[in-house]
Length: 467
Image (cartoon, rainbow, N blue to C red; front, side):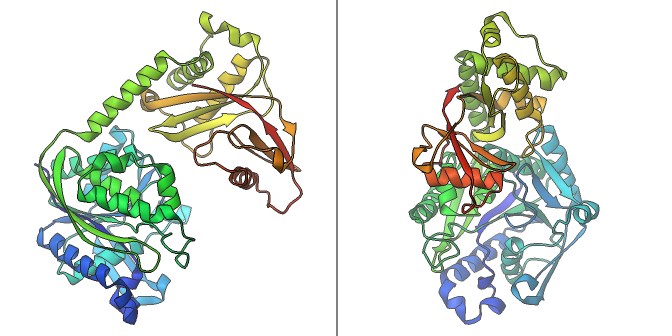
């Protein structure tokens, strides 16, 4: 039996706390009313534990985290109201079960205890993504003895976030605890020019898309949303929403949109969800579809990609490079600079390459860059054996770079290299979301740590991309 009593999506602007907002509460009256209704329904569902999902705690690019202190504390001192204090008990047994289950499913999850927090200068207090909805829950009569679990989202793929939600579901069922889920997050921050960020038309588009999909229980559309739509919207709610929906995997559910408004340039959406009868697992269907797609890709993969994949699989499993097979011998007769790119669930998982040939043959170039992409990309933890079946690959073979001017660039045709002394930044062509020369150059300069107004050298190169 699924033990979730209620699930909710809540915005978290401190402005909606009466002591902070004061007279400005009239600007967000719909949100205040929606939060009061949501809180009343969640408390009335009788949870024995509330799991909070926040985008403003200790957020990492490669894992999901959770505060592991027995007693939790937070206040609004960052916003000038240190007397607004909140104390709650944690549920360490529940967290430990999540850690165990996540480890078994190869989902990175860390518990931040006092030592980890001190050694890494991490936040050990409850953030406003939790405190704002907690304020409304307490106002609605939440019992003091009901503990909470403060989980910070990770910047992971949609599928991984969704799977993590299913892990929370499994733990709730195993421990037979009545759990409520509170997904905290604001929608687009780009609804108007006078908001926190500049206006973008995708802001309202994103908000309407999510609101409509949640109202119609369209999980697939949310999980498969365009990354560019999310980025252009400038939102912080999406990861929390996807984890929450993962909690409901294999169940039908009903939804209730309490309120939506964006008077200050940020979208505030408040919604509630109740589980219904059993349903086919979207997670299982998604994974089966992904496995079939990867199988088909392997059947038609190019020789450079096949060799890079075989090298990575053998190295991750056995710690050594394999001998090159007979059908790949032609790679030993060529030479060139290469980049090897790994993706998992459509998200970047590693990318390492060379600007100029560094090895005697293309085979050696590919092999060494493949190993580096899988095990030495500083942005990611090394690839594990469990991940191998979920990876897709591409290989870029680069032409010799040539000096050029800004007018000679085209992000759909040429990659770019910027150099100033020992600082150098490279960006490949044909990247999703990089549509203009200005965007391409800005990213390359940022990677190199070069200011736009410095006197730097520009080079361009062509790429043959293999799948």
